[in-house]
Length: 195
Image 1 (cartoon, rainbow, N blue to C red):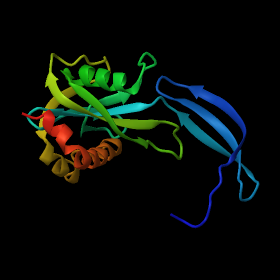
Image 2 (spheres, rainbow, N blue to C red):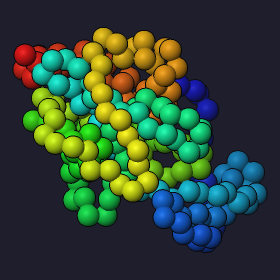
Image 3 (cartoon, rainbow, N blue to C red):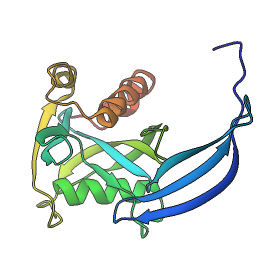
């Protein structure tokens, strides 16, 4: 940590600029505690997100491949998405996303960590869950704008998938950092769900 203290910036005014399906755009005018000068900042307001690291009884991770319009390429990821207004809690959103995107359910869900997506311009967080005892119960229920292929890889293959660049989504990789940390402290819990 640093010796210097950084203070919060006082909110002078806030104005809603736009409302899109996945985000709202807000302009905040804030006063610098260091200089007293006022500055405008754009904030993307987004709902919370969840990611799900689903582990099967065979020690395999459920992965998905899907086309990402921002990068214009197919990426390897894990199930996840936006917390819907109808989701009463984060775990409900994680369960729903796993089932919708993969056709899998799991016996136990544990929230293992959260990160800010991009705190310079976004106000939301991504919460990572590990889903233990994951198993297929049917087909994925994709939305009209989704095209997802579902697969599984061994837990020990995840590092290579990330190192090779095939899995490059920063929030997914952050989720695996949380998973490695959780696994190191809770290996006995994981073992209960493995055959």
